Image (cartoon, rainbow, N blue to C red; front, side, top):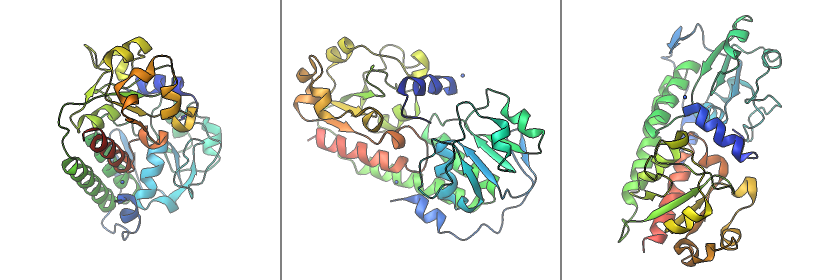
Length: 305
């Protein structure tokens, strides 16, 4: 999912609503000799272990490589920028071209959504399309690790990856010192003040630390969990922490935030509690969520002193 067009990102996230490094451990694991096919996941039956996979989801791409299915991946979409060895192409996940995808002769295509009839178009070539929607909770992310493992012949690795990621996240949260007082935060998706409520994947990750999300307001479900706030609302809420998920795409940092009109009065700015995040890690449900949780833990620890 692109981070270069923040507003488009928010709209896509709304539609999708209608890391120790566990990936290293999983990728080094022995092949799952117990995997058997056919495998049915949802409405899709995969007849045999896929050997030519096309991934149209950055989150799925990261997970496939974490599972050890990297050698089976022949192409990934233009936004799948991790890991470096993924076979990057110009394929679009936002407006997928069935003909361009079919040119890679895939036996399995993994996508985060199908709003353009992609599955039906590819079915004519005998290609199966597995839709793995953006996870809305950590539990959903863990489940998708398992499902991708089953779909690719790496069931044991998928289960191991889910267990290890869950354990790492739980441990980091448990080891994070509790603030002496409740802390509030503002999570920024872009410079037009789009944010994420506690009903979203990222919102639920942050909620694990007992933080109050100023974007929730009276209805955390508003705008599919991705409301656009106003500068006035943010200033009035005066959050204790500010998390920036628009650092790589938009060059935002503590200095640019502090230079915004009136923002130098925010508690988070005055106390040095503006925390930049890696845009991509913060927008994906991949195993690298452990890195995100670790970054939030460090911020909470710093702000809670």
